[in-house]
Amino acid sequence: MPEEEHDGASVKEQLVAACRGNNTELLTEILADRPDEEITKLLNETTTVLGNHLYHEAALRGNYEIIDLLLDQPDFECDPITRLDADTPLHSAIRWLNSEPVAQRPFGLALIEMMLEAGSNPRQKNKGGITPFHLVDPGNTELRDLIRKFEFATQNSGDYVNVEQPKAAQGIVQDDESDDDAEFSGSDEEERAEWERRQSQKKKA
Image (tube, rainbow, N blue to C red):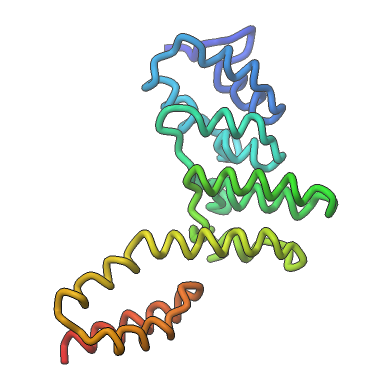
């Protein structure tokens, strides 16, 4: 079955063009009257020749308006990865901002905060083992602080909290728990692994 066309170009080509050009009107027109299931499939599965998703194409250009619209779509995937580098759109947005003048940082901060609030994972590593935080220009302290805040929130909402619950159930003394918690800052994976190892040893004792 031939691919559907829209104004002489395939729908996928038009979607890529809309995301690259920050063209919310075109994207809205393409998606109009389509069922949610089809919209989800189109937006999450359309890729470029190089293997970038639509979200990457928008993030690589700092296209706030089109990203805002994409994030409002049903079951939109926040962390697709590129074929070449396994970058997420968060990696892409930071690469874009690093190449922009310093005056653009407040806009970039607002864009990346929107992406994080929508569900982008700040701890996701690419093929090089690099998280979005490690891509940030060291001079952009506001963005580094923002990502750290979301990293900490991600840890506290996941397995970090689950580790706490069994200890309370086993009646472990609160003072001991506080000492171990003080050693785990929530900002370093190796430190967290050491913290979990100690908890495991305490449970076996």
